[in-house]
Image (cartoon, rainbow, N blue to C red; front, side, top):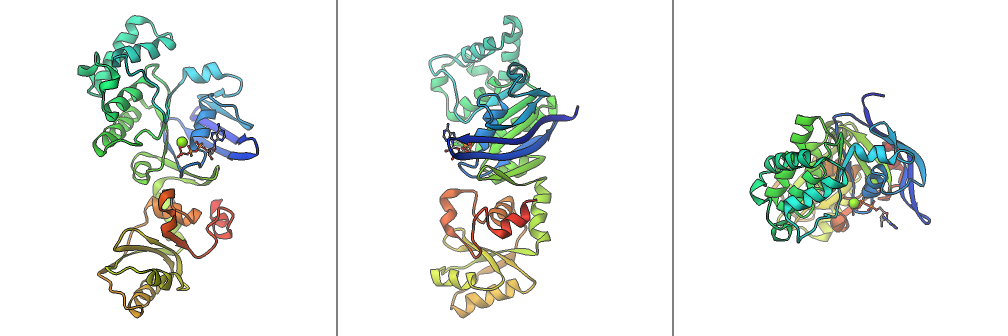
Length: 340
Ligand SMILES: Nc1ncnc2c1ncn2[C@@H]1O[C@H](COP(=O)(O)OP(=O)(O)OP(=O)(O)O)[C@@H](O)[C@H]1O
Ligand SMILES: [Mg+2]
């Protein structure tokens, strides 16, 4: 169909017996910013690599810009740009030389290439740095060059694999604004992978939440949040100055509680069901001699949606702070019932 930029059908990638991508089927519309949101090892990069023809699917098929990734690799590559997780640039070359080198790989005529590089350097406010070696740049400056490198061939579809990972807040905002402007101005379809909930929420028209190689939900950010509200799950945030393991387990043992997350030294987030849940949580804290500085029913974030759907947080390093009543497995009945 004319309005489809990418169509993946039952895509599978196995590494020996390990299934990294497990029967993914989805469509990305032309002009959309489509996000893959998931924790480390979810299969985001592996999926991107198959769509960019850098890795062959074990099973299934995909078309990108209307071309089959398995049989029309050259055509696919003509229509895409990729900002991969790892920056591939030569520190000893200047920004301009790096861009020219990559532009020559696309066989862009010399004069047109020079004009394109000048234009792109201006767009990211890097024209002053054109003749400086990349090795002298900050990570944020390097990433700006890395992103425009993927735009040299004026791709219809741009893949951004964790484009803001490791960047400071200012550079992160610049890259996000730039992604938005590429999409707005040139209508470029963007596929973005990220762990950053705020990034996905802010940029993406639709988000595919992936976990263990499977899509667990795919929708607009606002519809994803409605999953929680529709399921009668309240997101309750408590400010408690004296959090103890007993207090956490008291909240956990309430029949209304689904998950308890200790967010920091004084904040707890509870997912709980039912109209009485806030009162029940207050009673549990008070009867354990805990103090409550404040308690609120808060709007669900994508982080809450992810936790609700998968039983664990997207940031693996804090996963041990979550306690889940039901088995927190992708195979658990609660999770399964929400997938489709
Ligand atoms: N070449 C490979 N050989 C074996 N296993 C691999 C290979 N590439 C990826 N994997 C495994 O496949 C799984 C998915 O990896 P992938 O890099 O796609 O995850 P990701 O979602 O991009 O994670 P991250 O957020 O850390 O970038 C991981 O368990 C990874 O170890
Ligand atoms: Mg990755």
